[in-house]
Image (tube, rainbow, N blue to C red; front, side):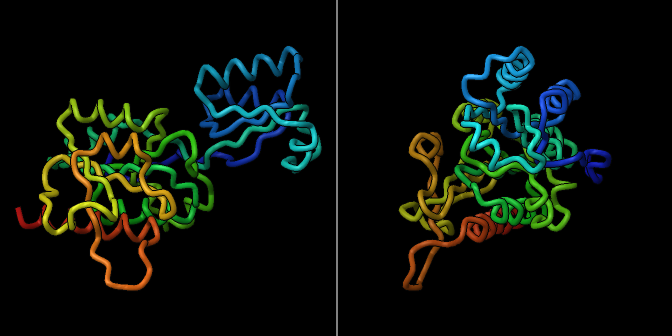
Length: 254
């Protein structure tokens, strides 16, 4: 599990046409999002919609004009799917990796990180900081696109990334397994005053809205990064890096 995730790269991004999209679902390709022609009652399209719902894929019904704007071939036949560039891992895979290394779990959870460059940079930081995985929500989040892979500088091959339906529920399940959570928040306790050791999940939101209220309420602590400048926020990937390495620093001292 420590090695490169060989063989997981697949044809990425846009898949057009009923047969191609249905085959992608049946082949088990990770689909991030599906666009379907609104009010289309065609049998194959209904089958594709059922598959999407079964796999909890983000589904959007759109106009013919919108599909035409998205299409690269002009032959979408009422359906366009966006597949991930890499397969997603499971949260249990991350916990297994921690056990394999003989370490307390260290996970990074991202809330509303929609910029693929930020996601790629955070995956890179997660790898270098020794985190066992990155967890993202299915909605309002960048997926594992080619841009993410490129920005991660290869870290996507080594660092598991899981996509979950409900971030808050996932955190509750992880708490039952011994993890506690610290949330990046400007109004929190200065990070140097917190004990960030043990099985920990670091929760980071975007620089505009931060971590959503429900997710923040599920965190055990909030951690603030000391800032002395005239602006009041860091880029999300930079904030994740600062806090991740404070966790690293404290782990080295224990």
